[in-house]
Length: 162
Image (cartoon, rainbow, N blue to C red; front, side, top):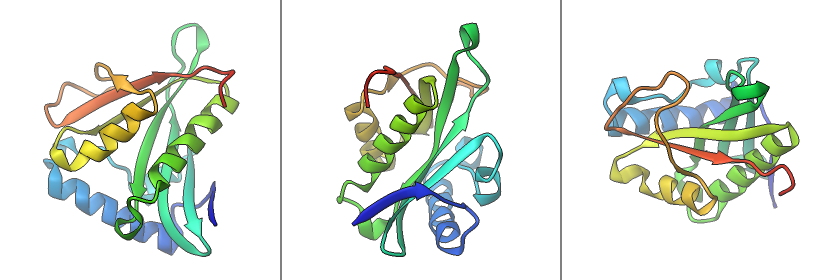
């Protein structure tokens, strides 16, 4: 059974997955276009981090970063560090993590989610996942700039949906 729980990005098995994530990001994008966070950054007070596990094996991870309040004090968040272990791809881990993060954001009173992903073919499965969950392309947000290597996406959250 796959469980998704809050986790510590500094745990050894999680750090390994995050290291693979960063290595792929730097292998597919120019360094100035890599916006992935390392374990230390993912441990910040404005970030909630989850891992997906089967027994004790880490199969994936994802995080929600609180952004500065939006108009009229609305809560906005950014999805960070979505990753499925290579051997676990095709099992719906990413979709489960994304649904879990979206539900947690709704429960936490967030009104809108954002994310940044790559524009290269390597990131096409991720873009399709986000689109299937209602995300649409948007302009850069929260200090990001125009970058041909990045695709920015957003989703307005319906608080009544679970």
